[in-house]
Length: 148
Image 1 (cartoon, helix red, strand yellow):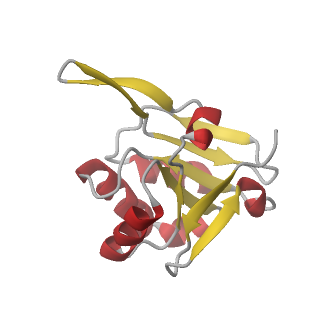
Image 2 (cartoon, rainbow, N blue to C red):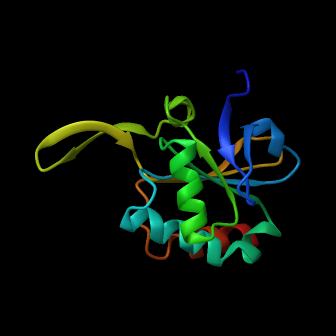
């Protein structure tokens, strides 16, 4: 499959296009979350931010949501995020990883991101996955897996 390229925001706030092939050679934590600046997504992003030193020795961290670059820039700035955020507005990457799902809230059905995390090996293959992630304690689980 061709490398999917998405616009992203780098750790210093620079806008740049990324493909997952850009991260080959090192393990990658690819985590999908529903929406910038919502309570669960903010908590998860801050947990990754606060544990980045425990993670980056073992992997890159990349957050992916359907939000725009403009939204990501504000989110990164407000929360002092220190990892890459990708903007998957057309949910191409989310569909590739099977995390773009029908959801239901208050009886209303809609399509959205199923909170999920993947560890990709040095060649970009899925090494480990967590689906339907519960935010509390999740980043510790990921760290525990990576440092084994």
